[in-house]
Image 1 (tube, rainbow, N blue to C red):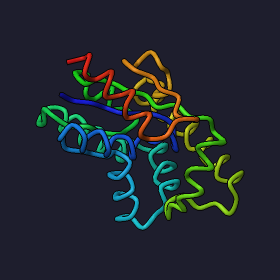
Image 2 (cartoon, one colour; image 1 turned 180 degrees about the vertical axis):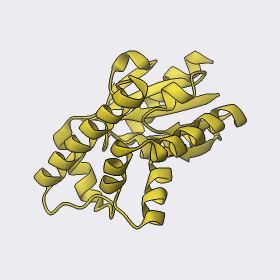
Image 3 (spheres, rainbow, N blue to C red; image 1 turned 60 degrees about the vertical axis):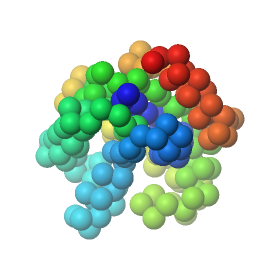
Image 4 (cartoon, rainbow, N blue to C red; image 1 turned 90 degrees about the vertical axis):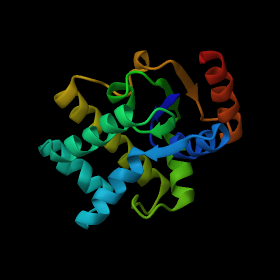
Length: 178
């Protein structure tokens, strides 16, 4: 079974995807980690990588090829990433939504080294700009809005849920999808 988890920054995509993969005994892949590694290799921030991707297709092409290749070469896995629903069409597609203030609170508390902000409010503004940047880019290159819920089989608002509660909702849905 191929399961793709998408969602807004701070919604718990990576946390839940890792836990789901472990619970189901599946391999876990992360588009976000792939992008962070690309940024690190280039010596730039994730924000800079996003701006770079807006001006040319090279970054997106590398990510797209990686996702599509994964969808063709692997059968049983969980992946988190924005466009997995598009590049792995035979997957169970899950979207995790979250209130922007809660997303900023979660990420700020984690003190991620690739998310630079001195206040939670500043981080919230940066997250909103990142989402707008991604939406512009994906509309330009694919005519797709990754935040449009029509693309997904299951949508969960994680704003007031723990990762364990989200995991239970997903495992219940996935067990019915088999």
